[in-house]
Length: 287
View 1 (cartoon, rainbow, N blue to C red):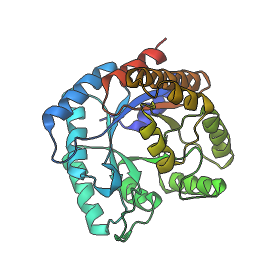
View 2: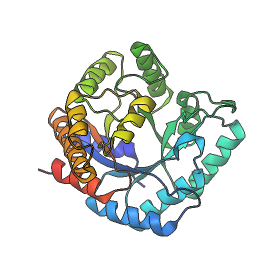
View 3: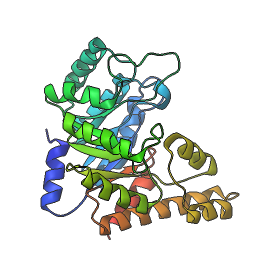
View 4: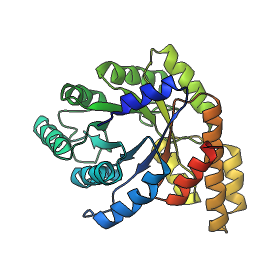
């Protein structure tokens, strides 16, 4: 099985970015038919890998995540990354998670803290950096999250860079950024990360804006800056959902093209399980 580290090594040698998608499992009990439909639409587009999330809000189902990841690998011959969160986890629950990952033949894991649910103790692993060594020691290729404008819970941007370096030192092989809408934020972050000693690949997470409600949610969840050009598009198409969706996808594609031209090592599309988003992104990047 190919690891994501190997994919990045190959892309670096070829002087091209990796291209990847992110999808999320169906809510509730896993619907294999739905999972196969989504994967069956996205895998033929030829991404280097696909990552599969936990659900937001601390209600993730690792079995659902791992089941979908195994379907992508076995049925569609595509490298897959399974997300694993550690908030509230114990040493025994992480050991069980590792067993489950192995049972599903998963080799690539994105290690995340996850959402902190009120009333639930963080457990033996307070941060993603705490779980990375355990996964690396078990032979997994491990990625971690990066934040172009700093983590929303971390006011000091430089402190976010310290945390990033700690994840690398703990054994992470690659980073995937949280979504951002302003590429200049990424370029400043990339320069700062390099000065902070970050040497592993950083892939850029891009999500198209599709509605005012979605953008508002992302701003407050992620702390992402909103360029005036997006504000104008939201105002222009607020009563025209179809045109707003089209404008949001076009804006995201423009971001991806610019990032590719400016040497981004990886481009990661948050597809929201939508074929038209993934297809438009790949068309833009293959021009």
